[in-house]
Length: 77
Ligand code: SF4
Image (cartoon, rainbow, N blue to C red; front, top):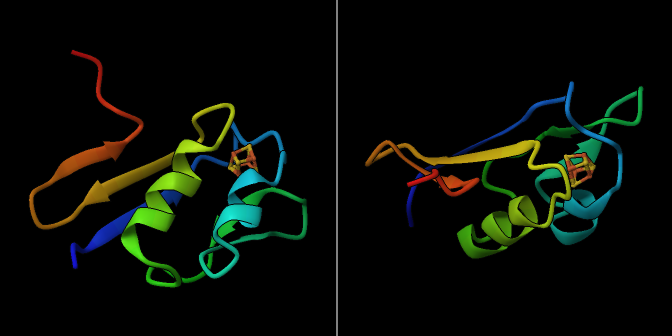
């Protein structure tokens, strides 16, 4: 299993709740209603990646820590 580092840019988060709904073991709302990561390994990698991709404003970044590859959002070519 890859070591993923997932972060939320709270300045971008519009509190849609998609990530919390798709991966409740990883994301939760903070006291302001913004998403935050509370458990980096709270769901299988594919679930975390899908939840991050579900963000309508691309506020979530997922990096594979072993390879340093950014998985979400997909880097522009
Ligand atoms: S899906 Fe994106 S905008 Fe919606 S709560 Fe999560 S981080 Fe915020």
